Structure formats: C-alpha cells, structure tokens
Length: 121
Image (tube, rainbow, N blue to C red; front, side):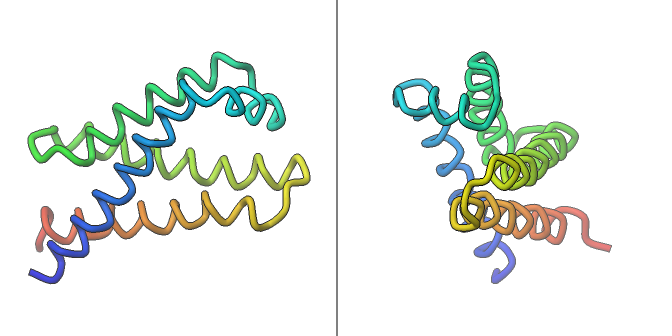
C-alpha cells in the first residue's frame, strides 16, 4: 500500500506539473522569451508543450501500454536533465536549475515505484 501511495503522489504531482507548464508554453507570452533566452527556436516550445501533455497522460493513465510509459518516462528524464544543462550553460543562477532538478527527482521516484509495483520479481 505504501508503494502505491508514493507512486500515485509522485506521478500525479509530476503529471499535473507537466500539464500546467505545457499549457503555459501556449498561453504565457513570456515563455517565448524564456525559450529564446535559452537559445531554442520558437517551434521547440510548441513541440515540447505537446510532448509534455502526451507524456503526462502516458504516465498517468493506467491503460497506456508499458512501452509507451517507458518512452514517456525517458522523455521526461531527458527533458529535465537537458533543462538543467541549458539553464546553467546560459549563465542562469543555480536556483533556476533547482526546478528541473526537483522535477528530475520526482520523475525518478515515480519511475522507480512504477517498476516496484509492476515488475515484481
């Protein structure tokens, strides 16, 4: 029961965070400026927003096939790691990089407990 609670809290939290951030990519004008600051083209903001919505749904919905869940988890882990590197490489403060670091930790917790619950030895 403890493992299920940890899994669902971490999974719902990160999924909601990704959904809210994805919507922000489309409706908050400053997000376009933020992506430019990081050196990314504007179309990447749109692609990442769509990917975050699809990824959040993939890890959140129980009926999604395992291979798609694994792909979504990998995508989020890669995205958060890349965000840390991107922020640090343009001279942003360490504080700015703590948000993707925290997200990376939460997604790793979700992924770990996903495996504990679904792939018992």
